[in-house]
Image (cartoon, rainbow, N blue to C red; front, side):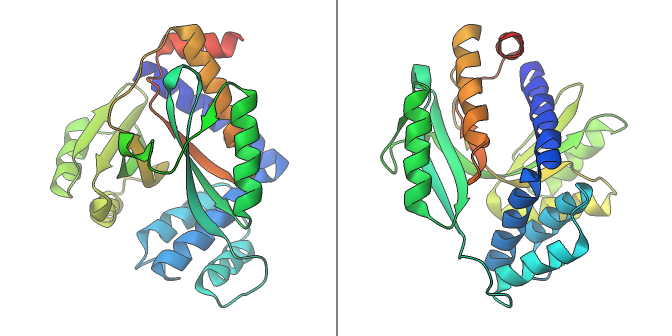
Length: 251
């Protein structure tokens, strides 16, 4: 978990840079639009939307932007192209499986650009279904460990329907079935615990451990993919070790 925590911190720094460049607002807007479309525009009844709004507020997105995004999702505002969620499957170098979660208004453009990026950096785009079986869609929550009672969170999460709770010095991560997302979210809220990340994720069923240099190569590709405007998140089967992250940062 140490390497995973360090990688999360690198990702947070990248998010801060994206915020300065204005790219973050695009991703946050898309999250809100999709959440509102799938579960309605009332955040009290739509935990995915509630989390998306909270994340947007945490990054100082103006209230009017949030309201406009919700209306686009519910169909009240028809401006802008229609966005759709799509997962692309692929392989990074050294056999690491990838699930690339995108929100796009042009599938043809997105798939062409992703194919180019993967090919340029030693990866390949895969046929639909050839990679997805290696992942499971799960509810996910990440909580800063500082000041928390691990036993209390473990008990709360399991009672709310979680399958697994993982601990390290920096983060507490909760995993559960998709249908338990709302129950876990509500339980955390009632306990006054605010996750810094929450959503539905593609979690690898088995991880692949690589030598640090090869793992760093995969991490660089993931970063390049996540920098694409249509990519919301990249999931992989890579086991992110402390050595891999150190190699990545040294490059």
